[in-house]
Image (cartoon, rainbow, N blue to C red; front, side):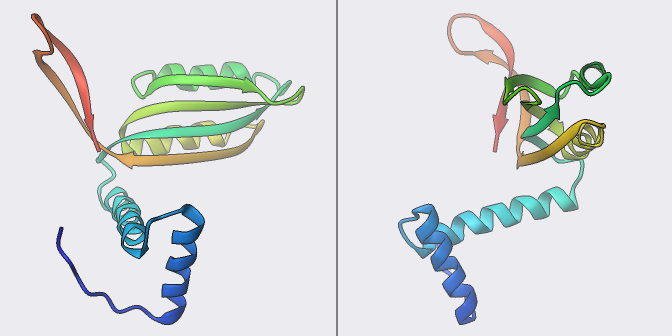
Length: 153
């Protein structure tokens, strides 16, 4: 590790200390490393929309909204290359929580999330993106080679 010196105003130091305490970091350095990673990931995503990523996309869908299920299924089918897995959990008689695990270029993930989130009957949505390098490899993990993906964050 390399040590650097950063000058911060007292209000910003107090905020870092609050975050470190609330999240349970061992100290300021851990909190600062995490905050820097998050900020850099967001900056990379904004600067390079072709950057690959893995992400979770969560939304709440209202029950009984005309054709919502079919519209969501059609959107997901059109972008089946992005969706890795999905979970749907009923919340009550009026809504269900959906979580999709997706991977692909950031711009395509953002467009996919927008296509879902703007449907009539979607109440809330949240997208969490983690930049990642997705590599297809054909190598051995035993006696026989087999192609599969590796995701490096």
